[in-house]
Image (tube, rainbow, N blue to C red; front, top):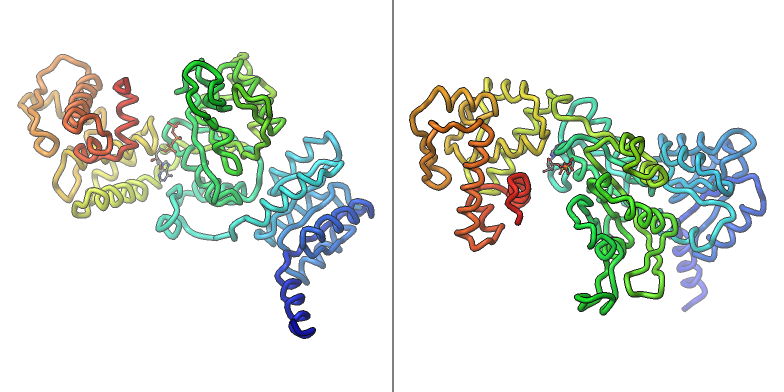
Length: 477
Ligand SMILES: Nc1ncnc2c1ncn2[C@@H]1O[C@H](COP(=O)(O)OP(=O)(O)OP(=O)(O)O)[C@@H](O)[C@H]1O
């Protein structure tokens, strides 16, 4: 290579190297970071105070920033807030004094990507740089734009807009997130959004329903096992933690974890190491934990059902999902999106909800939140072949009662399975509707030889909705 070409290549390398800003008033820390980061092929600029850092941010593009908490002209948190506000694309990590977790939590809440405890461990530093540099670029998008490619929480109410903004912010951090909210309010969807917008987006998202795992299988399911670890362990099994390694582990219904398992989980989360059953070696893991439950987790702590130390670990940042009845103005938008999606999936002509019917939907309380709205609309589409959906088609709980008692004649359900439904029963309404739902599901499952995908198609609902209905009706066994 000629000298000129070599110079050009070096120059290109230089301009392509990620540039990192280090803010600290301790020369030793600056030197350590400068040396280590330069060895990793980064370009480093350093500042000793907030004002110097701001000036550098204005004059150069940076891909990552490290800041100490105590600086001569202010607090590192100020810089975290400043960068999150003005340079949302630049992840910022705080360097915290040993044992000061409150600072770390405050920084994560203010929008820091992660924190690095002193004394700085080189492994932690390298891992942090690697994840920070793999963050996808910040995308400012409306729910509509996002809907086209990524799944998103729909709604234009103030609470939904704020929630999406918080999710975007949380995605650019490594903090553990606890999502509270009623059943069906979108907790899992929020967790997926955080993962898909995070540095871990190319790695697995593993969702675990903690309430659905039998207690005696918990350890093997979470931590995995080696072949021969116990009778029946015929081949190696990684378990949830190792499967989610590098990505996100979503612990749904976390309040349902038995206390013995809570202790083991806490240990793994704290030590970032897992040992499979029957193994002698611990394996390092790097997993972001997002947890959720429809129960009040702080109350579970108060009555001794949930360990306080685990609660603090999981609940670094809390995200609360509003109930659908708290964002009634979003009901039309969400209902129309569900209808459109369902009509497209089942290849039927587009439908619309009549005005008075939409008003009724907006008035309904939706104890099961968006999932209930989805189920109501899917059932409506299965029963109604018209393109216009009216009040009588919806069969909202109290309204359905009026229709079935008023109308003692037989109602013919032609669109599902030509089943004749008699309304002159003596059952409470919900039990009656459950019986119908159960019968239709069992019939579809029998006809499809228990193939859920086929059964769902016959019923005109999604597999997920079928699974939910089966669980609700106790049909899983
Ligand atoms: N704001 C929203 N916009 C669009 N879809 C939504 C919204 N909220 C929830 N959903 C949809 O509602 C259904 C239920 O959501 P999800 O499973 O995330 O709820 P959840 O709170 O995790 O429920 P559970 O507590 O029962 O586990 C999903 O199909 C989800 O995509």
